[in-house]
Amino acid sequence: MLKTDSPPRLPFPRTSPLELAPLYDELRQQGPIARIRTQAGYAAWLVTDYHVAKRLFADPRLIRVHPENPAEDRKFTTSASGAHVPKDRSGEPATHAMVRRLLAPAFSAHRMQRLKSRIEELVEDCLTALTEQQRPLDLHQQFSVPLPVLVICEILGVPFDDRAHFLRWCDDIALLTDPEAGVAATDGLFGYMMDLVRRKRREPGNDVLTDLIAAQLDEGFDDSVIARTVAVLLFAGQTTTVGRIDFGTMFLLAEPDRYQRLREHPDLVPGTVEEILRMAAPSDNAIHPRHALERVQIEGATIEQGDLVIIAPAAANRDPGIFDQPNTFDPTRNPNPHIAFGHGAHYCIGANLARAELNVIFTAMPRRLPDLRLVRAIEEATLDGDRLNGGLTELLVDW
Image: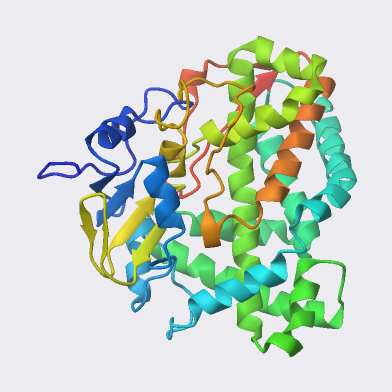
């Protein structure tokens, strides 16, 4: 456990966008769990050890929302984490389990396989649009951002034409530096979703929103549960995938032979995607905050009731006790038991969707853009440190 009178504060400084901050390794060497401060300035526990991360992911004594006070949720993001969660939070774990059960069919591997052809169409359309643009161009804004929005909108039943509204809200919700903007954006997105639930009830479709509305009669939950659920899926379904597209592209183009090998051997794409998921770290803040329901003692640390615990999969995914040469990008790594999507009850419901998108993208991109290259050195890439999802501000490419 870290011995210091001044715990380090997120975000930790990096030497390169593709590398984790060295401080993660230093903290892990001192112990699997350390005291730090969040970017908002509050005390927290940081978990960097792979085994401890998996144990705490699966520990029912740690929950996403604070058990009593919504304001405590904001100690991590400074924005609107606890907004529109019922004041009585005792039923939140049961509601979470119910919603996951209802969502499971829509995000299953089988469902994603059926959607693969549609995802391929969307990827091809977006790549064609790129070839018609003046170069060099910003791959981040012209490909990485719009593509996941197209995909998640189709699955959820959210009108893509409304993106000017909900993307602005999602952007402000992720702000770490403006609590008032985060709360206002959360109110805006929640109100939009409540209205969309009413519209979808009148005009059902083949989508998640319609499925959840149909389940209301049997399960007895109200519209606010649907609105919160779809808002979270919309936010997470596009922001996290954007970062993986950008960082995956940078990892592949950092050594051009990697990119060319994918063009010549598309069978290498699935393993490459898993390595991208293991190593991509768009933000030090894109991690998993939890609150302790009761005292938890683990590895010499005593986590008190109400304490904030931050599990960092990106750090756990570079644990040398699990991964040989953990800081080396190895598309042939096997096995690759990363926890990029978490573990246990909160394992990311969208994991199959993210994998499907990334596999299609990194199969099509080398074929359609074989001469793709970075315009600037990777070290010159700028990370957005003011937002929860982090990521790049731009990714200039040419071919």
